[in-house]
Length: 157
Image 1 (tube, rainbow, N blue to C red):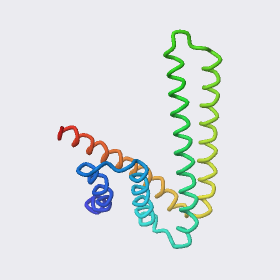
Image 2 (image 1 turned 180 degrees about the vertical axis):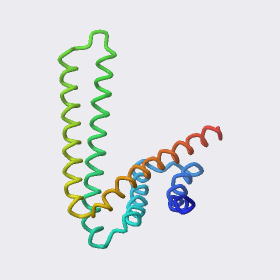
Image 3 (image 1 turned 180 degrees about the horizontal axis):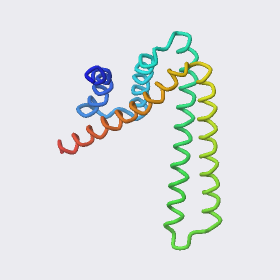
Image 4 (image 1 turned 120 degrees about the vertical axis):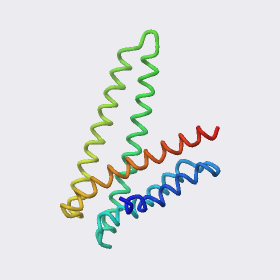
């Protein structure tokens, strides 16, 4: 357990440093978190140099695509919410947005499937399983750290 805590220490220090310093631009924070993720992922999966050279370009491309799809989805949901807030929402506009949301979801599912097929050619079965566990735990830890920072900031006010 203590080795897990120590493993996330650089991430905690990075994010907690934001509590006491000038806020960094969101993109810079994301880049630093992704750098730590890559470092920890390399360790967790025990990637060879060849695997790293093949895996990370693919991983980074998929992460960018996911981020773009998420941003698009959020914009569409905001538009849908605005339409539904109208006194008389237009059915045609609702249908159009729902169709675009479904297309977004389809592109995400296809992207995830394509990514996983390519990952299957690079990582062993055990490494793929470890990757899934790592991703879940890393995301959980990031959310916990951010939650703790927000709570700490509220207490300081």
